[in-house]
Image 1 (cartoon, rainbow, N blue to C red):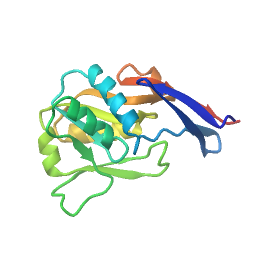
Image 2 (cartoon, rainbow, N blue to C red):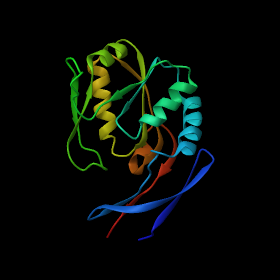
Image 3 (cartoon, rainbow, N blue to C red):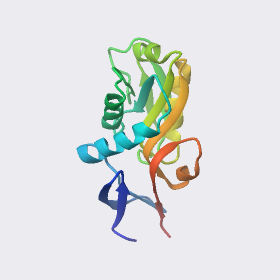
Length: 181
């Protein structure tokens, strides 16, 4: 197995370490947290590809810097984050369960009632750093629909594995999976 993967996205090159996540699968570890250069360059390119939308939604946590920068570039005053736990301030939160390729265990995503109200009747773009199995994306979609939002776009910097074959997502580059034998 190779040690790293060279990723070129939005004019930026990164060497991603290849990490084994199960007995038969490894992934190129793409972490945007703390990488201002890749967040800003990718947000600029993704914002050009989005259709007109009213609000952006992401899942906590890696999508947060990306959704912030896209919302800033689009002149939006707000974006929504589906949180990974119910917080004490949340009044009647909407909750959904998800198991993604990177967490490998069930976790919840939830929207505060105020966030749900902000989504109701609005055209929503769901934003993430990487779409792989689509499990996290689908959980956010279910929350948006429960809140009464209209999903207008699904976008990510990278589409990993089979996600790159989907025609219902916007992405900048493909990220391969690394099956182990």
